[in-house]
Length: 485
Image (cartoon, rainbow, N blue to C red; front, side):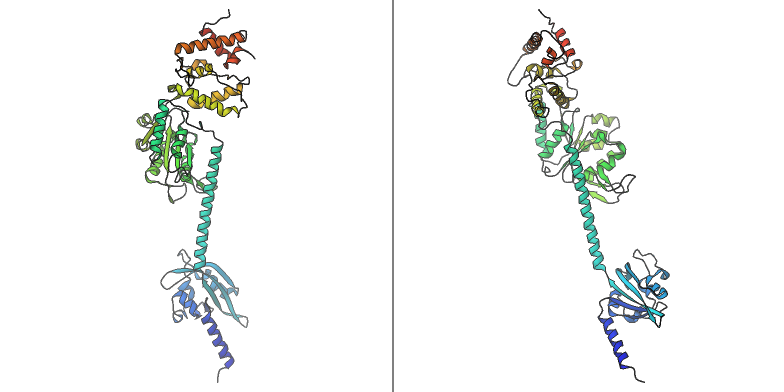
């Protein structure tokens, strides 16, 4: 009996379609054995069709999850179509090749019925390696964008902090020998990448020197990042320096970039470096020596290129002897020391500094007519300045606020004045001896008293005219042995 020619033709057309299909296609009977495999499926799986037909297809190519863990046949969506009669589509699994490698696939398992009786399933799958690779690249690019956004956000937050923070002063003012030595040191070390240790009392302008070194260096186009080590809680040092990953600890709701990473290719200024806890000193030493670190909660090692400038008001050599500071870290920081002299050791710079601060603050405090007298300068140079240049600035600004009449009214604690004579160059361009200055002080005080009818305090009194507190003027009258005629 001859076969129906239409059936033969249809079967041949089906075979041709399966052979031409670019997707892998194979059939299963109700026992999960392979009934047919098209050429595309055989090619992708690196088997011949003859090797696969009659075998358990799940055991051959679907036996394991992407991570290599076992994939039991009862859990297989391909077989599920044989049992429940439903179409099952999966987009995130892998098939395994003959050589033990795998590739990502998406597939659809469709039940085959004859007279409403399940007789198998047909599986159509495609290799989605290119798409998965593109998705990975896209995710990596998006992650990089997020990292850049985090970095920009962190830099913006840092710059906002900088905008709201006043620096010690905007220029390096003074022509004393200590200032000239400091400026020479800045010019010498700026063009190198050497680590610098700036030492000096609080308020001597350590940050200003650090900024000058950065601005004169080849890194000036990159940021200068400042960290005040004295203001960081002990438990947050590592996060502040190196950053942390989201979820690293309670409250870490997002990734955070540390100061070292922010300063990459630029300069990191560690102010009050002597305040760094001992357990952090070894980690700081490592990043200085190797240029590598890890964020908290992240196994990845990161590399940075940072020029370090440190500053301290402590004697680090004594701290080393006392066991509070690592000796190896001290030597790593002290490559190029820049010591700054306190203001009391350079009184000749006081007139120029005071004039600079007055000029800077006149418009800010709406005191355009405020002026500084020679007596003001002499009083400033008598003072010891425990707070150094920062205190001088504050004194000048406070005096301007109080000087509505135009005459600068200084407010210096009489008990902390040094009692030393002002330097001969008390007023720029005018050289006076000690005797002349004392005579000037006496004459100026007497003139103020006589002009006010010896009214010491109160509105229009001599104290207001001289810009001093009434108690200061009373002490001065006693010291100069002044009395109305």
